[in-house]
Image (cartoon, rainbow, N blue to C red):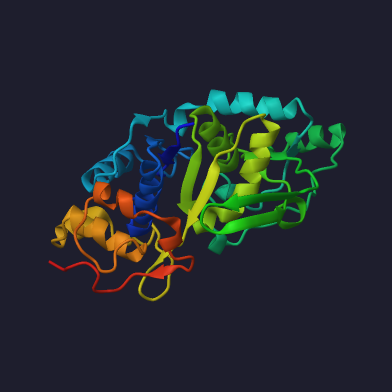
Length: 309
């Protein structure tokens, strides 16, 4: 079976070096196996995303030579599909309304380990139909998955065997927010299955999401992809890179005098694929890719890695 990897940027800002680092490794992992790459724009929360950032993300990937073979429909246009998936879970008696507000604002965004996941108490799990009807008069509920009592195990392509007691370490998680926006966990699992993705490469901060998505694959009757997680790139002071902090984007680096080949070579050096920073094209790195070379610890960006203008 052909390997199918994917890029799945969220257009809430310019792609920073950490996004590009992960994109390069995802591309190399798929291409080194003779596989395809697809692009999907994860713009679930349209209040936080912009078509301008979508266009810039595409330009950035192409400027670096990170091509894709096909493009999936943006998530903002797939609410009908997510609703159908939700109804399949409801038919199994696995979904219930939740009137709690804690953590809901972030449910449509990819959760990050450093944000601190909140384990849901299950407060609304046992509400009676009469109680639900009364609470609906006051507010619209979110919808949560009734998590099974089980330990989910998988083998990460980079970090090896992993496991999570889903009920104890996660709890019932949100499938649709109270404002009707579908949550990241449901959308990403449903989309990867529908689009034939067989390999997901993403940052280590999303490692704890994998058991939730594996559970959704099973409940929806779908075959899960392999998962590989990359170390995070950290700012020189040890802070995680983020779009909201406006960390280095490709456009900013190009304005400072970098070439796309220098950016690719620098990222490949940080990934352990080159023994020194030197200009490179992604295609030249395909024979060098090996998960065994990639660090498992997070990587701090050297201040002098890329030239200044």
